Image (cartoon, rainbow over all chains, first blue to last red; front, side, top):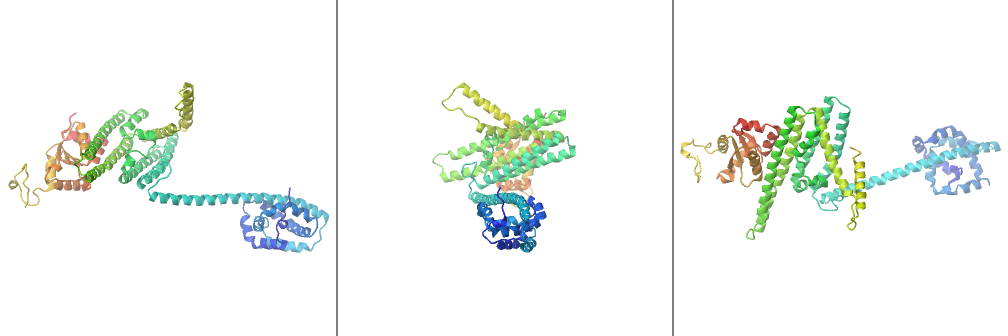
Length: 419
Length: 130
């Protein structure tokens, strides 16, 4: 175990080191906070200062050669660091410096030297531990600093890219409009909020909260949906295709998309089985809601179909029609798309609000939990599908197939443990 | 006083009070709306109008449809409708009246259908039977 003495480890003269201790006394007092050696150093100040004096005398004797050679590896540390790291073990360096000066004049005996050696070793061990702790802290802070700089750079890059209409990452460098990129970001945040709301709903139901408290949570969830409809309204103005073709959605959701979002009557079908017990009146109300929703959806779908037909008629026109004129007319027709997405979202929003009115607070809480869980699972299905093991084109071996099926089942079980 | 002779002349200007009120778009609209239980103001090429027609016909209603692009003063009527329903002039149609009273554009019609208030309104106006 190498004992380490501050004065032995530098190329400076002892007095120079002491001077540097004095000048850094401010640092020393502020650093003395969390280090375990400090409590020790306070007690040992007197011993330390006398041992400092002893060491000074030893430096001029042949005995010191052994000690200093063993400490050569410590010279990697800069003098300033050494001084800084050791300052906290000297809460009152000016005091100890004058004491050290005073002790210089004393003569030393052998027993004093032995006592000092043990103490020195203990103190050295303490200092070593403190030094290592400080080095770790320094490394951590440096890591934080570089991460912060990297984060700032990333943010700047992203802002620049966004203003240029690029979105790197999931789209693999494909150009998407800034309106779409903004919506995707806001939707991602909305999904995080959704997860939080779901947790609230679930714990609220399990804790059997009073209706008043549960109502707050349920109304919060409705506002959460109102928010996404508002964001979709903004997105529809800037990039209706992004919304209506479901670029923002996961593949499984996208496959079953209706007019850029969920089909209200489908949702009600899911809920009807999960919401018992319902009163007769409630059941009638929900069936009626499902029916009118279906009619409205059908009407909107027919309207959209007519838009498509009209568009086809415009751009599939014969050579006699002026090309630019044709395109201008077609562009005019496309602007109607926004109206359809808006109406579809209105339908969704009104359906959710009306559902809230028909149901009791507890039923409404369960209802929204069911909705949230359903979409969570649909999104999870998309991920599982994307990561499923695929058989090679050459291998049609049945055993290979069952292995991959097993993997899917295992992965599914793991994934659904959250539910 | 000013009036237009329409090719399919629907009324005789002389029999009507002269002045600004004659042929006033809002008055015309109100008159047309009162003529049937369910009246839709539409433009033949408008897809949303097609949607609202589909909705009402699908419910078993037999609405009276006024295609404003076939009316020589259609533009005026569109502007007046936009003011009445609160919609922007570019999306003035479709507008639905039930029992002579304004219901509104597509969003209001759908909202009232979801809320369950549309069917009673239609029954009240005699447009729907059980």
